[in-house]
Image (cartoon, rainbow, N blue to C red; front, side, top):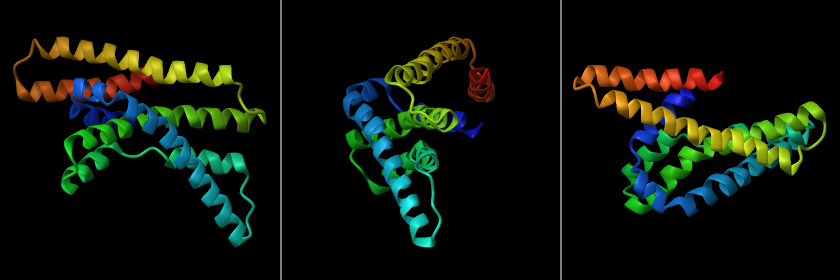
Length: 178
C-alpha cells in the first residue's frame, strides 16, 4: 500500500517535459538496470548460499533479486539533491527510480509464473505482462491524474487540496488492485 504513496510523492516533483526529454536514458536504466541488478542480487544470494552450505534455487534467488532491485524514488531524489548532482542527471536518475518499480513488478510476475508452472514464460506472455502492467499503469495513472487536476481546479483551499491528493493516491492504489 505504501508503494502508491511513494510513487505519487516522487512523481509530484518531476516535470513532465523534462522527464520526456530524458525518456531514452530513463527507459534504458529502468529496464536494463533493473534486470542487471536483479541478476546480480540473485547471483550473490546463490554464492552466499554456496558459502554457507545452503543450495538456493535459481528461480527463488531471482524472485528475491527482482524484489530488491527497484530503488526508492523519494530516497534517490533526496540523496541526489544533497549530493549536488547536476539537474539533468537528477531528472534522469529520478525518472529511472520512478519507473523501475513497474519493471520490477513485471519481472516478479515473470519469475512467479516460472516458479508456479515450472516453465519460463514465452516472449508473448512477457510482452502481455509489460503491456498490462506498464502500459495499463501509465494509462490508468494519466487518467487518474486528469481527474485529479479537474477536481483540484475547482478547489482553492490548501487543506482540502492536500486531502484530495492523498485520497487520489490511496484510492487510486486501491482501485488499481481490483
